[in-house]
Image 1 (cartoon, rainbow, N blue to C red):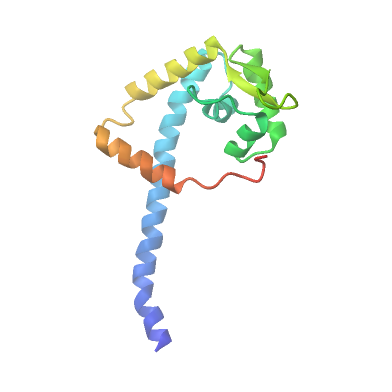
Image 2 (cartoon, helix red, strand yellow; image 1 turned 180 degrees about the horizontal axis):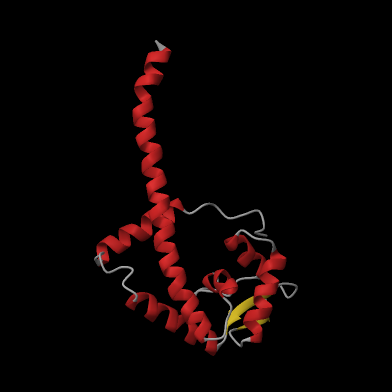
Length: 158
């Protein structure tokens, strides 16, 4: 009986696997299109695309994160964030500042030029057509679903 039940469930399982693979394929395509826009804007600011992840972790309107917090968001080693911070600082986009509550820690904060870059990114992503097929409600739903899918923070948080 167990064998029959497993055989009956196989087509449903296969379609579930195929659907999830298709979702990932489309996510990659959309991600690649967004990456192209981001890379173009970063290039205009003289910033290597390799630091894009660190910039996303420094979203305007949020508290400046510590380098360990950035590493946790990016799921990478803190030394990787340190290298990215060096590049961002060299281009005048961020500054390292003492943490307001713990002077042993350093935070990364956007400079005025860093805010200009963020404004350019938002404007260009909006104009890119990536969201042309979605109304505001659908965009909200998409954001909620993708946020729900986001993996938990890495062990580098601390």
